[in-house]
Length: 332
Image 1 (cartoon, helix red, strand yellow):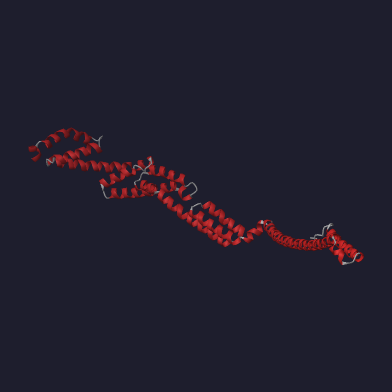
Image 2 (cartoon, one colour):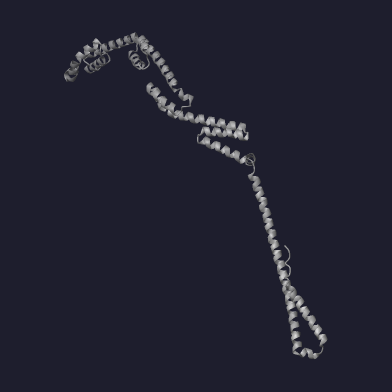
C-alpha cells in the first residue's frame, strides 16, 4: 500500500507565511525604526506575521499527525491483510487435503479402514449365526474371503455356520417328530404317515426329513417280521391266547396273499380256542358256577358267533342267568 501524499493545498500553509515573513523583513529594511513597531500598521503586520507563524506550526503539526495516523492505519491494515492471507493459505491447504481425501479411490479407502472393516464383517457374521440366518452368514463369509483374502478364516466361519445349522435343525426336527414317534410306537401307521408329511412341509430341504415315509415303512416291516416270529413261536408252543392276540395285531400288516397263507394255521388256533372255551363252559355248568358259566358263554358267543357251539350256548344263557339270580340255586 502506498503512503498517502500531502494534499495539494498544503503548500499554502507553508509558502504563504514564509512570503509574508519575507515581506515584513523587506518593509523593516525600508522603514526601520522604533516608531514603525508602535504604529498601527507595524503592530498589525507583526500580529499577522505571528499568526502566520502559528498557522505554519499548527499546519506542520497537523500534517505530521495526519501522516503518523496514516502510517499507523496502514500498518494495521497490513497486519489484517497478513492475517487474512495466512488464514486463506490454511484454508487452501485444508481444502486441498479434503479434495485429495475425496478423490481417494474405493480401494484406497478400503486399505485405510481395512482393520475396522474386517472386524465389522466378523461381528456381522456372528450376529447372523446367532439369528440363525444361515444364508446371510454364508454370504458374508464368502465376501470376507473375496474382499480381504482370508481364505482359512472364512472357511472356519463356514464350518461354524454348517455345524450350528446342523445342530439347530437336528434339535428342531427332534421337537417336531415327538408325536410321530408316539404314533409309530402305537403302531398307528396311517397317522404316522400324516405326521411325517406335516414335518416334511416344515423342512423341505432336509434329506433326513424327506426320507421319513421310507423310514416309517422300514420300521413297519421290522415290526411285522417281529410279530410273525412271535406268532410262529406262540403257535408252536400252543399258546392259544397269545397266538390269537398276535394274530389280531398282524391284521394291520398282512396283505391278502399273506393272510391266505396263514389261514389254515389261524383256523386251527381258533378251533383250539373254541374247544378250550367249550370245556371250561361245561365244567362251570357242572360245578354250578353260574357266574363263570355266563362269562364263558358270552365269550363264546362274542368270539365265535357263527359256530354251532355259540348257538347252543346262546340257547342256555337265559336259564343260566335265572339260576345265577336265585340265591338258593346259586349256592347249590
